Image 1 (cartoon, helix red, strand yellow):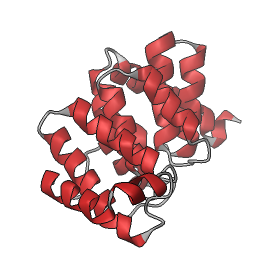
Image 2 (spheres, rainbow, N blue to C red):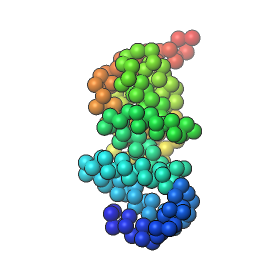
Image 3 (cartoon, rainbow, N blue to C red):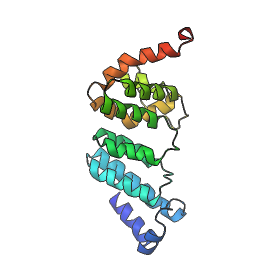
Image 4 (cartoon, rainbow, N blue to C red):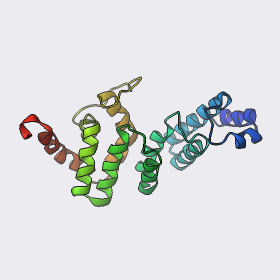
Length: 198
């Protein structure tokens, strides 16, 4: 992957690297380079080199703020897993138009980390449940993750939930009492949402 990244940089050239910054992926000749960067980031993350992986994805978002590859979703999970909550919140704020369930489910965990089991965290969890309730049983361990990741996902359904848990499931598990809080609170959310509750 490092060789592929180096080859991509050489092919684009220093002048165009600078000139096209902020518009990568829009230029077809930059796409192999961006794919190589993502591949290197994944490999580093799998090898335990989280900080370098994070730095590479941050660089990708400078080159291509539109983030056609969805690199921000991976970055968010990595930041949360290492406890860099302020950076995770800043990343969420940088993409307010992103309506994937990953955003509200991360907000719920951030709220729990900062405020504990209180009104702020519960409101954030309610919002996350409203966007995609299928995430909850996967995080709580009452439903198993599929053996194979879905080839595509649709907003609000189980396929999206798998993607969310793949990204931030580790962060939920590493946060003391977060999963227990989720298990205790989600049934109340469901009761309020049921027809009998109205």
